Length: 297
Image 1 (cartoon, rainbow, N blue to C red):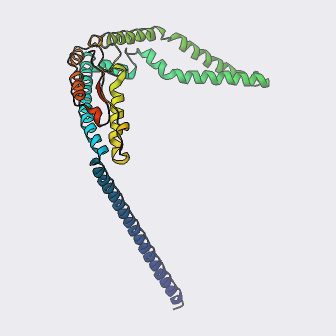
Image 2 (tube, helix red, strand yellow; image 1 turned 45 degrees about the horizontal axis):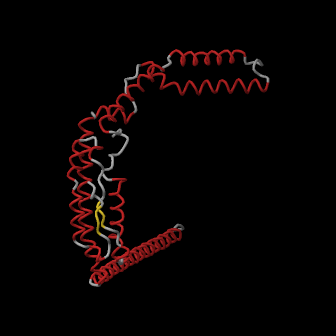
Image 3 (tube, rainbow, N blue to C red; image 1 turned 90 degrees about the vertical axis):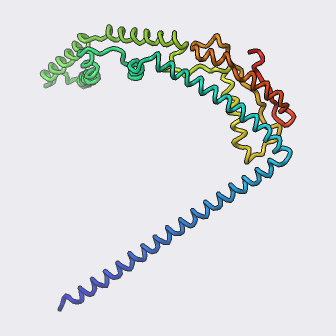
């Protein structure tokens, strides 16, 4: 009976703990509900802003400046599509030629920078050389330290002999298994394969990108300028002076291309006809000069 007060006290403590846990759970649930409501409100605000921006852009397209932009956009879209299609064909031909001319084994050799199978002594040396160098360095540092404090022959004669023997063994191992000839043979193999690839492609295709099909990579600059204006148009409402000229890129001389497929692509050169069509549409009257830079091809 004497323990009943303690039992009642424990029960009261348990009830208080349960109430506290329930209160914490309710507060956590309320906090999560508030976060969810705030997120829904933010999403709704973003949606409303996007719809409002889209509405203003549609209204602007009906203005004289917007109509000029729409005409410019139609011509720009044609030019972008032509550039992307030509570049895709160019890059695809480059990748196909690489797959046909360079074996997976050679690509693996270049990736791993290993061109010849390493003999066992060379492989062992490459694995243990760092350890031997570390041991030799520690020995030399120990000898220098002992010499500085004048304790080289002070009670450590046998230890000195053991360390000198280990040092001599490490040096002998390094000199005995010198792999200079193997390294030279591997470098010669790597240079031979690299020279063959350069003869075929003009550059090493495993370490260099495909050569540009346009003069000074003009097509990349054209893509960037047009895509930048199109991406920002719904916000910035560009005027006629802000619209870049619709200029077809100049293609390089077909004679400079190493691959026959590339030469055929350059011989067709769709940008001459496209530039003429854009120029005939008289796009300059609606903002954004329309011209071609391929008249000499």
